[in-house]
Image (tube, rainbow, N blue to C red):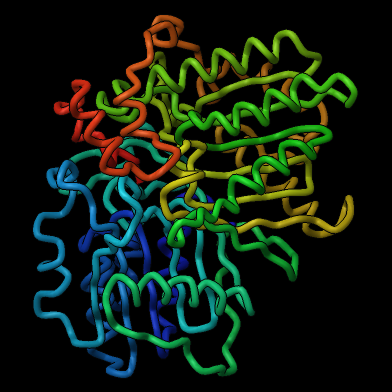
Length: 471
């Protein structure tokens, strides 16, 4: 596990330096000039540290190396938020062995939201972090960090997670990338022939000792919907015996609401603690407009059910270190689930309808074989590391144990780091604007008839919200 972009970017950079045959990158967004190394690490680097100059240098030095970058062919509404003329930027004066493509082959209304990287057959990274602007931060989450400035502008504190795997899982992830690449680009790349590969040399992050990993997908294959991530969430929530820990950027999926309510209110089983870490507010006014009320209604409903049950529910946010009298929120972008000390899921899917049923998403799942085995201890350690970071305290696995978790979290609230997320009753009480909510967070492709009906009902000025999924 790699927590926050500093460690992921550095690990990716180090493993790419060792690449011999192929570097495959897939993401919702890329920026050619995002700095993968910063501060002293950048000063010591022998190669460029910005993404595209770094890859170009590798390709020119190693003509046999293949680099392929697959990005979402974004809706025009994002044009002002994206790198201008991005295809030209990535293609201009770059070696023939580096190729950039937009992926637009999706169901109507969907987007390519997977974030993963495959290097040779040695290592693959999967999670929530794009190689894009405004994602970099380290685990300190300073309120004002000089290394978090881009183009002279300060960027907000930003929390995210990524996992890496080696072994046979890498070949499976390579296959998934090539399926999307071949469909989007028309170039028929074949899997690399089997070869002995040196193990990764990643020293950062938190080790998870296991020889099994589940690869979970969300995508449309013709008329079929592959919703493996949603199926895992439902089963995992139902199986909880002590606690459920979630990190998510959004929480609007009715299917997740229903699964949580069923487990929270099950009086035939032992009560559990449900802890949700999420942003303290919408990232943009547009998100608040089209998603804010739907999310608040769902949270209000969850709290009502929890208050009437023996189980407990808390929704927290996190503030940057050095917050003073006015907390500066750390933006929660990770997509992560931990159940008890048994189950872990990390991926790209938010807890929205579109992420679980429409967009292309990818995640990795881990399940311990027995209580107290090395993976179980690693999962418990990860939960402690995450909560310790959010609360600004030592990541003690005993203190942050899964059983009785909330009674140990609430006393940390008087500090400025861990913050109870308040519910916006006024926003929750707003009547649903169904055309906006359907456009922003659909559960199925927007067929032409539905789209025409939405426009006819007054949604013409809301068309910019067709793809407002935030990376």
